[in-house]
Image 1 (cartoon, rainbow, N blue to C red):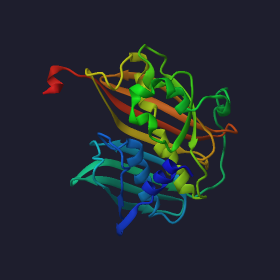
Image 2 (spheres, rainbow, N blue to C red):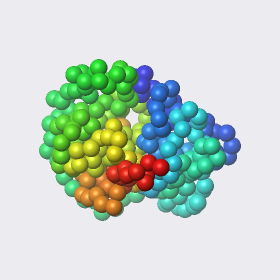
Image 3 (cartoon, helix red, strand yellow):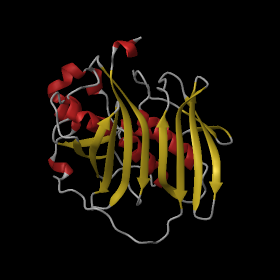
Image 4 (cartoon, helix red, strand yellow):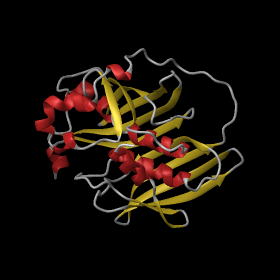
Length: 286
């Protein structure tokens, strides 16, 4: 594994401090708030550590407050139900005595059933596309330390980089991604890393038609909720095509949905996210 991926795996190796209670660390980086994908992945790992059989098949989560990157996160797991085929868990992430994140996760024992899926889009192979580092090279002086920071997920964008656009674009986005190294054969770990990566670009897809960026002083954005459905087993260290679109935004909220396909065309994950897209007025500033 790369050093960055090794650090991510360590972040997901939660410390058990009591029955159904875990503590998660944060990366040693200068951030204003914890990356939402990290909290989601750690929450799913906490839930999975309390389940004896089955694998995650869905999660439904709400981002409640910004996470403080300077202190650990406490994860409290409630064992809602253990059935013959399904297990349900509720996880609350806590900092400063307050809930910052809430997740319901369900686990299912593998069983046969009716099968169908949509087709994977026809896109260039990941090896034919430049790395994120190569794409960002012309902007390294503007980006600063973020450019030099190693990233745990190898990303190969198809088309323009979403955060570099300053004109209205179609609300669609596609990229190949995979963990930057070979992971252990732990299905829960692979699912959690896919969960981490799933929060990387959905919000940017909502912003694409509006020609605004995170540095715009008149814009406030934040993820509100995040849902995922895991259809088939996956390996996060193999290439996954992340296909995203945003069908609508209104009332200061946008919606994006995405699909992850394995390289052989299997649809392995579907997801949806709603985000706050607020035009800041004097009222919101006070």
